[in-house]
Length: 189
Image (cartoon, rainbow, N blue to C red; front, side, top):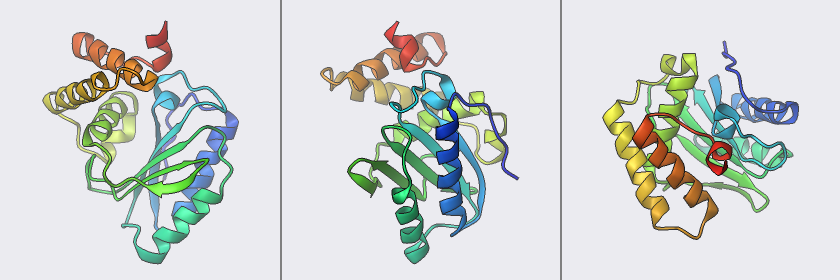
């Protein structure tokens, strides 16, 4: 049974989320799905924001089933700028994903070498805001979370010309000082 946590998504993004989950569920069993990023913490802008999605599956997506799921997802009409999808086999912990997929106007591509700290931060935010997250994942220890936030801050400070990096740096500093997550929109204010 999939638990539905409250999100900031509009109806089009929720429908897209359901279609992405269905595309994966045709190949392996989907146990649950979670919206992260601005769809979880606020600031989601219909048609403009990325949709960050985590799916928990009962078996690895491999070979032809993996290819078919990716093709189905790539063929869906996105309601926003990009889909960032991480699929985890039940029992594996972030950042040990089975599939890390990005879908945008340039198509679908797997991103297996993404920096680990992003996944640890997502898990830290999710465990705070999604009640059933810990039904599938072990809690991220505070020390590990702070290390991941510090790594994201260092990454961001190396890229001062990127708006995303500047916003992330401000969010990371706020978390390290206050222990509280802000949305990108809150940082802009």
